[in-house]
Length: 421
Image 1 (cartoon, rainbow, N blue to C red):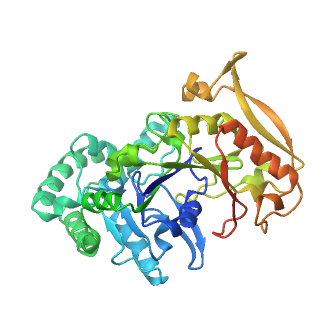
Image 2: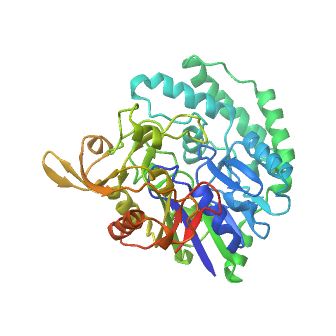
Image 3: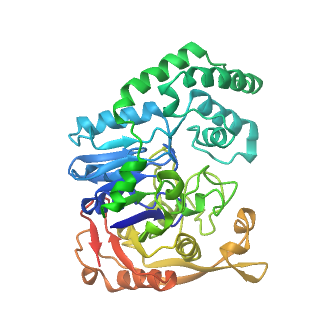
């Protein structure tokens, strides 16, 4: 039995979807345990190119069962769309995708409030995806949430009525359009009717799988530094993103997690507000344009920067990472020199990530090391030895700094563009 967690060692967008899709061929269960549809994972394989937000990225492996744990908050419309898309593409998820009835639902008022709160904050906005994630998690911990299990009784109608009394007052006060109870009720009843065949208590399935020595692959949403506690608060997400969240979000006991794969992009990106110490501010520079990406969920252009090894080292320590996967190494091809942050200084003193808060992190001075680049196209490389010498040195530098081995290297967006060491 193995339980492997795949986490991002930066601010998300590290390429976890590709890694999960690649590793899923060897597992029995692949599961999402946190977050919601604010996380977008891009997968490219024989079925096509997919931007997935709720269904586990390993669902493409025919022998794998997908699980969406109770720690995931669900926008039913998004989930239905994904299921229909996957079935139409020939993936076939019926009978092998299960949703926990403990999952909380993103309601229309959550999305409305997310946007209204951001607008009210003005310059102090945190840069949310406006998908309703923060408000639904706030409702979850303040006993105001609505779960799939509520549909099995009259609890849904009574809870929805109560919530609309509360939420419509706030929406009206912030200048929004109040919601109609009957319209919301009928809409979500329709969602439940479509998703009911997929809703199943996961606890016995997970426990029986562990006892039967089945192999589990746990897929994190977002990245380590968007964690509510260990991230750059308040510029974070609303859920716990480190591997231990699988215990609450799926029912996996912590001692069963045998391996933690830290996915590390060969450079750094971030969406939304918050500190990014190695950020490249010259948007007209060749390096900025080379690193520039568009977020799968929001469509926003990601902020970009050089690789930050202080961040990676911290993610390894917090998450108990046992091995790394370095993605998008191919993007660095063609650079004569590559800057890498190896430490921070603040007011002339050496500091670490743990020494500062988000605002302090925004003021640190990065200590850079210059690495020699390479010109070769590495997208066809099938082994570590086929990489240019300077590319090999770059990977080894990451490995030495993190203190754990780099087991996989991404040389392109496709599943097969992966070197296994």
